Length: 141
Image (spheres, rainbow, N blue to C red):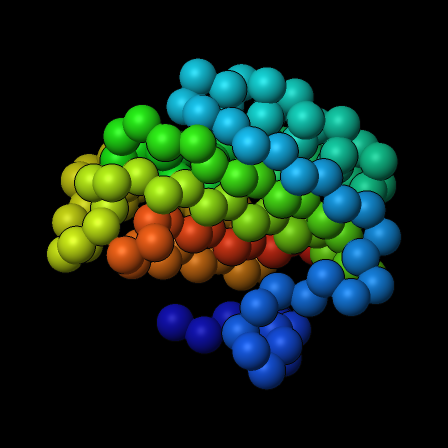
């Protein structure tokens, strides 16, 4: 499913735009750190100018993105949040060992992915030999 609202926002190499990033937060985390990531997302979203419902959507998206990356087992994952223009971006990456190999989704994983796609203007969850990477973007307002 292609989201026409964000057709051309990726660079040629497929990476999210960091050029011109107005704010950047990077954190490493483990599964037990997800509540502190939610607090970080609230603070970041407020600084980015998000309000009420959109802020709640962003915080939930960050939480679910982080949960996707560590759901496969113990690992240290990385979270990056930034703004570019009128959008906030979230990238979470974890190198959980259980995600290496054929991709198998349980019910919780499927629900997380559906929720991310409903909350975000763009969401992608990729599992591969290097672990799981979640990319998400939301308009500030």
